Image 1 (cartoon, rainbow over the protein chains, first blue to last red):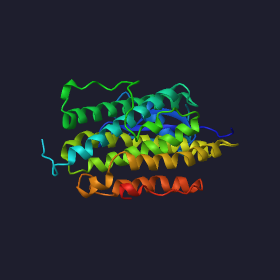
Image 2: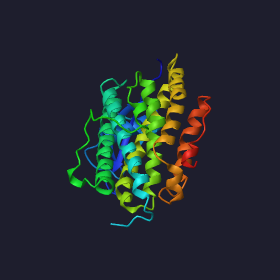
Image 3: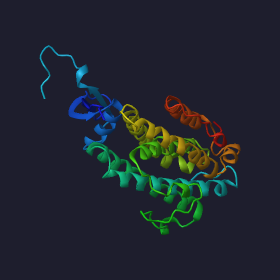
Image 4: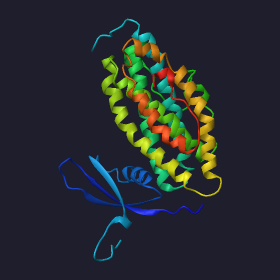
Length: 66
Length: 227
């Protein structure tokens, strides 16, 4: 099986007007699985919103570390 | 507590609630089985959380039946793994899935069938169901995301893996259609306004249709449910 996983960064907010905060990352082969892994891995709080972003879609002038 | 709009409501709804309870219990058992056999640790963790939710739903449905239909109230026994499955719609799903593609097919086709029916009941004119089942529907939303992701993962793999998922779905379609036909008299419930709209069933069709078409699988939407 050659399907490769990639890293997704996980963001969430507690309440609707809170800013999104970065929680960490998960490895997955697609965004749906990344979301499912994220909500079940970072479940220490009852988040209002959880969002996942493929790391490769984060643009930065300096290399993203971590 | 709201009054029933039709005197026949308990007779029509009671077995349906029990069928959903038994189906949820089987799903929870399947998820628990695959929790330690899943392809990745993260998948196992997700399945553990999903199993907990499904077992909780089985408890809630059991309580709804005890409070609203059987009259047992708080005397009703709690649902536990190993309880005998008795509802004829759920019985064909008792044999355990034998492969991960079969399990993913079960989550895609059957878990979402349960979710669609719960959505219909959440919109029922029988108001004692609203809060309990509305909460279940909210929790079910992430189950579909997981199932769709797991299916996409298998379909993108090499070798015979996509074919295995396709075959598992092909084998499951008639069983799920039979489940819709035997879980309860849905057309009667619709006539009586207890399952008032066809939107949840149309949603089931729109959810699954594209995925099954990608697999070149022919299927018909659950007509008994009014889709």
